[in-house]
Length: 330
Image 1 (cartoon, rainbow, N blue to C red):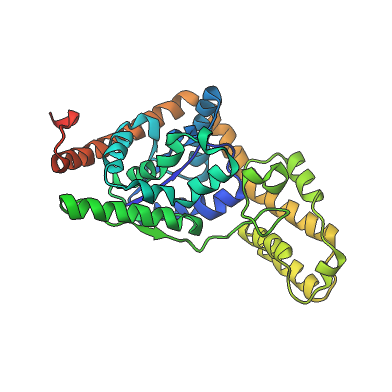
Image 2: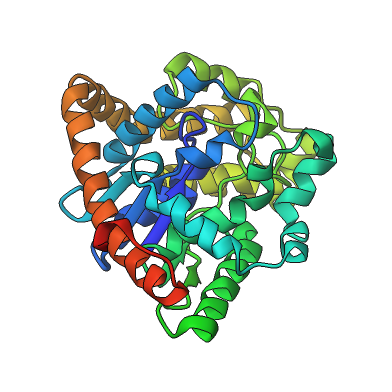
């Protein structure tokens, strides 16, 4: 079983799509899949409740637009499957406090924020993340390499449970895809991320005006265009053109680079045209899906109910082993 989740934190950008979601779409043809929109994870820091609902609905539409197929996979909203938080509490009781204090994401967050202002949810969210996977007995988890530490914790929790209460959970393996690794537009030492600012990422549903403005604002030095070795900045541009399936454009750019005839104007024009040709079909598909929100709501309600049925079955097995009662089988 493939299990993977995404937080509803705003528009999907090209880094999200090429780094994760396109891989999800491909995996649907090979494995049974469960994909989640984990809105509870978006509550660990200050947030706007109305915006969270809006972003959750938007993420449902966006994932369906990208090709997550309800006929092949289960797509759920985390808050519609309360068994996640129930299992999370039970797993909390298996993990020593010290282990959580060493989780790098928590350490990173408290370095930016006063620890006194950091929520318990932020501290313990890796346990909920483990519950998100184990409740569906996930054996394969598509993640980025930056999630390796979290996956080690999930594996440790599953093993600890099995050792204490008998084998129940498969030990999930991280699935690292060979998909394109898209970096920040202006800082190729960083992955593309909304947290780095508007100028550093491109939405999958970007308007032409914003797309053109972001690309035109990029700068390439003369030395960079004339060097024999491709710079990280140019390499990221070539990677985006390739990911957008513009092979002829990529060959033209590479030939010009090797002949030292590559110009900033040509790079920008090629990148703008490549991205437009790739994202426009997604934009049109999203418009069609957005016209019938009642159908979208019905779809996500039905799929979340399917997810809940599976979650209830797992929670019953956990409850039997850990000595607590289960509402679904009481």
